[in-house]
Amino acid sequence: MKIRTEKESDFVAVNDLLLATFEGEGEAKLVSALREKASPIISLVAELHDEIVGHIMFSPVKITGHEDFKIMGLAPVSVLPEHQNKGIGAALINEGLNKCRELGFLAVVLLGHAAYYPRFGFKQSTKFGLICPFDGVPPECYMAMELIPGSLNEVSGQIHYHPAFSEL
Ligand SMILES: CC(C)(COP(=O)(O)OP(=O)(O)OC[C@H]1O[C@@H](n2cnc3c(N)ncnc32)[C@H](O)[C@@H]1OP(=O)(O)O)[C@@H](O)C(=O)NCCC(=O)NCCS
Image 1 (tube, rainbow, N blue to C red):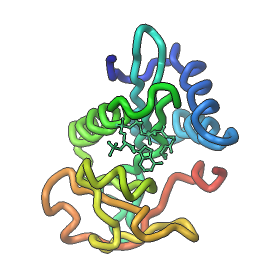
Image 2 (cartoon, helix red, strand yellow):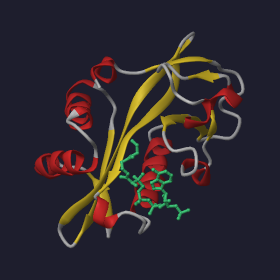
Image 3 (tube, rainbow, N blue to C red):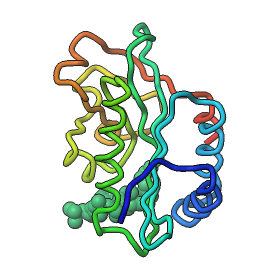
């Protein structure tokens, strides 16, 4: 299994993966919109025997009052149902976090399963004073991680996503 940067020739396979993994077309549309409109993005695929079996995307978010702070939002991440629970999601997340660090980002936020992401170092975002912008999210499901220890010490506030997220 190989993790690599997504290429234009992967777009159809990634779209099919997103449609197979999530209910509805929201995530597939979101990924297409972010590819076009957000910058920089990190978009990685997991390839197994020439098949795309997983995908992850990171796009920049902003913290109110700290608009220059370099922070990424992880969304979405997906692994084809028949390939889940084999460590592919973990490999995508770890490689994605490395790429975020390489690009000089200082932290990452995400909305996800509270039982899954703490193993990568994510903690409830409110511990860092970062506020989820979405309604009705259980606080333990909105999480943040420092890519450089202490990077979130001096910043707090509400997170703002790219407008493409409001169409989800
Ligand atoms: C979440 C997801 C990306 C994980 O990928 P994966 O390759 O199956 O994950 P890994 O093999 O690295 O890790 C498996 C672990 O994830 C846990 N996990 C998977 N889905 C979970 C869920 N919905 N809630 C809690 N834990 C979950 C498994 O229980 C397993 O835990 P264990 O190691 O303690 O047994 C994958 O399950 C997926 O695509 N789910 C559907 C899409 C989705 O919900 N994406 C996240 C929101 S954007």
